[in-house]
Image 1 (cartoon, helix red, strand yellow):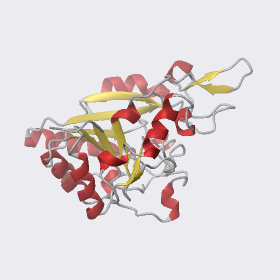
Image 2: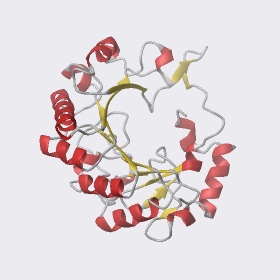
Image 3: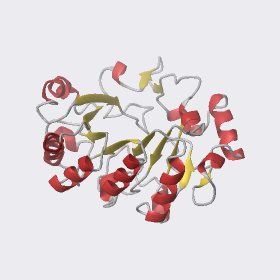
Image 4: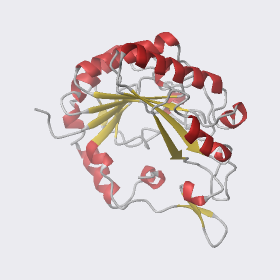
Length: 294
């Protein structure tokens, strides 16, 4: 029988990325990685993480700040999580995808993979995914689709596109083409921007597709967030170094509950730090919650 919580766990196989996306903390050099922390989750931390997560969780997400495919042990980690009965998800920029990697992921029992592709031309794609290749994304979708068919897998291949001004002219084309590209599902996602008060060149033209609204003074403001949060009750993030965080918005590890190598997960999510954060998240709104889109 599972214990009470967390129901889902996000793990960080890699804390680094090969791209320089302008609104990503890793691409901007604003993450804890700049302080010299581990680039990849070690075998020791992973074994402890899986052992603790399997006691309570039903879902394991293999992504946080870095690019998961840069960790060469990712297929093995997925296979072990799958073997422990967890539903597994990976989100990737797909730049490191090869035919062999695609087959390894599908054979590992991966349930869902999210491929981020924010443009249908090299110009629109490269406006955000700086340093990346649109063709590599297209190749990755084909490799995954072929492996799915060949291995008769039920993996869900999801194509995800940020709604940006640089690609808004392509949204309808995305709807028409995503299946031809090899995806099973298309998801549009609003973009988080950091310096938006005076407007931003990536902000979509229509505000209904943005996380921001234009005030009477001409400045831009965050749209209202929900007054409560279930996510911090139901899940945690475990970083490459084993830090247990309340959610994916704690980019700088400012609200760590402690390290998975020092205490059981069930104890960490109930300690004083965790209780204090959860109380604040429902009332005082910690800084990281102010940028949340839930």
